[in-house]
Image 1 (tube, rainbow, N blue to C red):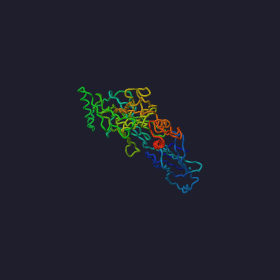
Image 2: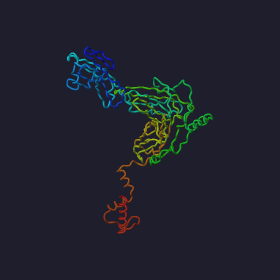
Image 3: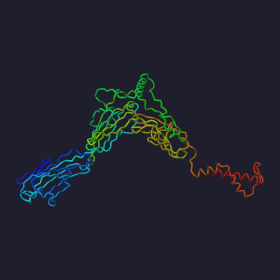
Image 4: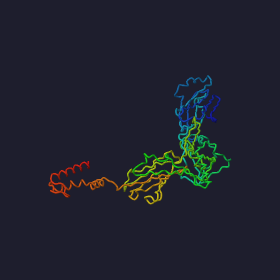
Length: 487
């Protein structure tokens, strides 16, 4: 018979014997560690069997993982003396060498003893335990939401950083820092809409001047305000040599390098120097393997003057980690696009590809690229083309000298770079090259005419030239020159 049991122990009482079973509790364990489950039982009867079960599907399925049957073992032969009543304590252990997340769940230890009065009856008792397996996050990354996105020069826009943490169990705690300082964010139950206006907060005004601001940024900010107060033109930073693409990469016969135009420093009055208000939203998505993916969204009204070159970090705390896990990004406007054109010498009829091959700096978030032709439309008739690579199919001679503008921009700023297309002659193929070479060689025509005239040479050459052996020697010299030229 089996009596009712508690969570960790079950006591079976009868007139002729008793059995007490309990499993030692375990704290949460980390995936990959070795775990030992210990089942302790105390009885004055004779051992019949010990069975370990792993319970799955909410208790509907029990998987047997260990069995000990006393009928086929002599380990408990010292209990054969029924006349001597004594209490004996035993322990059964099950070791999991490398515990996995799939091992998470309840386990049961069932013990059976013979009734002291008769061997036909078995006294049963059991204990159970829940094995809690933790797993540290396996990956963390920070991305920008809604990218690529353009630079807004005349209207404030919201900006969102998304921190994605995967592989953790239980769900980790995720938070953000700016320039090494924790961000005091307002929690949101729902993520803000992408098209919503600037978010508002009722908390007291806080100044951003306590941060370690770059003196250059402050000087530019003040100069902008002074220019507007005087009614003058906003200050525009003059591009320095450092912003010009690498000449070793860009100087090619096909293109002409045009100085870069930097417009990422022109900001209107809507830009403020106050510290922005941050809003934080968390979402959790369970995975089939028992882990949880956490997404933390940090949203604020972007200030390109202050936020450009700001360092944001996402940090994760988890009970399975000995120290926080983090990922960092630096908000940077694009500078110095490096443009590469192929082929290096474009001819009429060739397909020309103009590609942005990186920047002088690490750009984040990912920029968007827009190609236009200065003073005219593109070859396909469109006004502009969005993409990193501009392809011109079968370029005509009319495109020689045409100039193309590439605008690279992200929410932090925008920059323009120009390149000029140089188209050479006709398209060159193997047959055309041979024909053109034969037509342009006046030396090649002389020996062919001499061969058609036969072995004899005329007595007089046109224009009073030499005759006889002297004329043949001139032809021989010309043939040698022709041979040298062809080889």
